[in-house]
Length: 326
Image (cartoon, rainbow, N blue to C red; front, side, top):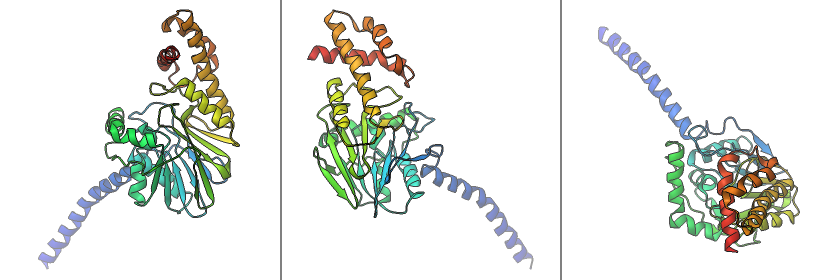
């Protein structure tokens, strides 16, 4: 009897000791699914089938764990299409949680807008959950990703978030797009608009024909300063003209709030002010630092954009170099 009582006490003690471990394991599992990454961000319905999670407009950081783009998804009559699933496996998992709150349909297709990893490294989560998912991108995006850009972005995101994205593995797009290609997925058609050089040399914009929605990737920014180190002012302005000529009602930029065609007009104005003024002043033999106060004054309506002061000098220098190369 004494042996049975002792055994009973031992079992209870071990069980109680296990509870904290179980709770820790549960907490770790929840963290690994990225539950905290998007909890404070709502899913916004843009059109009948199209939804977006509007990310913060800052840079990748410990606080945002690398989430700072605008992942979009389209619910068809049979499946889900995802555009730009984010910067890491945890961001992608958090996006899947948002999707599953709206539908239990499987993710069958993913579209990546360009090579910058804050938009597409979430492919890992998509393939992890749906091994047969088909992933599309500009052919040059696939080439650049495989020739070192993917690895560079993996390391950059890990550094900027102090390890929050460390689980992420590279999952390359599997299918190269063609300009003007229309891909029919159930009751939805995705039309691709590829650029030679705009934000980068790897950009694709995606038109959701039935919903009259354009997802621009980083060809358009709103409320956040862009970078054009790898791109072209002239090419990016042309991309805005392509979008403005389309039969669309809503525009989802790569970063910043959703709107109508004014998103494209506004960003085109921003680009033209910097480029045209830089070009004119360069013809007058003015240096970039001398141009800055003149251009900043012309950009008054954009002065509240995230990182305005930090980015404007570099953007002017890039514009001057491009103007000189012309």
